[in-house]
Amino acid sequence: MYIRRGNFFLSFSFLMFFPLHVYSNRTCFPLFFSSPSSSSSDSVSSSVFLPTSIKIKFIKEGKPFNNTTFFIGPGTGLGAAVSVEGRAVMATEVGNTSGLTQQLLNNYNISDGSSFTALESVVSGSAISKIFSIKTGNNISSEEVVKLYRDGDIDAIEVIDGFTKSLAEVISDLALTFISGNGIYLAGSLMRTITELMDKDLFIKQFLDNKLPQHRKILELMPIGIINREHACLLGNLNYFNSK
Image 1 (cartoon, helix red, strand yellow):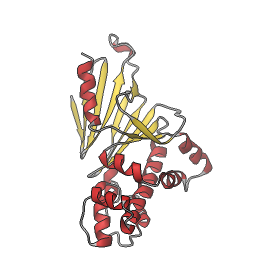
Image 2 (spheres, rainbow, N blue to C red):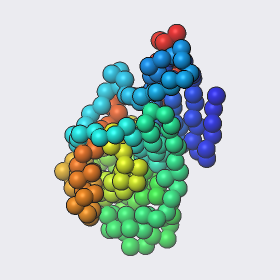
Image 3 (cartoon, helix red, strand yellow):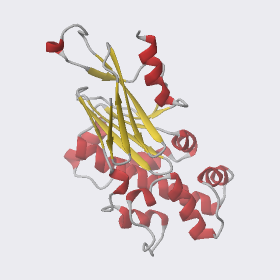
Image 4 (cartoon, one colour):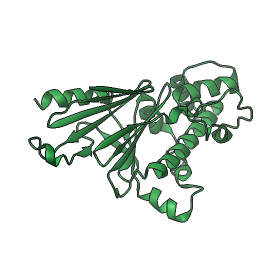
């Protein structure tokens, strides 16, 4: 069964193990449900977990305090989804919201925001490429910008640091919105590359900054990890076949 919500597709396979994928633009998030009793429809008490076959590299350790998990994947656009108590998964259109867009442009030192509307126009791989082009006149891919960042290019450093700050602020606000006490997980090849290079102290500082003390304490408990596996969304299908 497939459910479409905007750019999102949810696919469900109701077996003992329930692989669930959330697709947004070119990012998909693999979630796996396991039922303690596959024979009893009266006791559907499912729990969400990331299987051991998916490697998680943590940017920030934490102490999970509930079963709500937030997934986000900056790529061509900005995909995000929330798993709640292992019973429901909510696809979102966070990337097409606009409330934070103009504020986040400050992180890139851009004053003219007329060509930036949706959130994904400032937090995505496409955003990295566009902002670098605006600053330098050099139209290259986000992967090439990251390579320049690695080589110490000043403009690339400004753009990637701006992206780091912006991503942290977005995740911080959404983590509080959904109270994602089970953790925040970043997905996609862009994030696997950037998180190897980015200033992690800057990221964590921005994640925790500008919050009231009681909210900062909540954020401090939330782990943040990278799904460090290519084609992670295919693992749901693999899990399905392995369970038969």
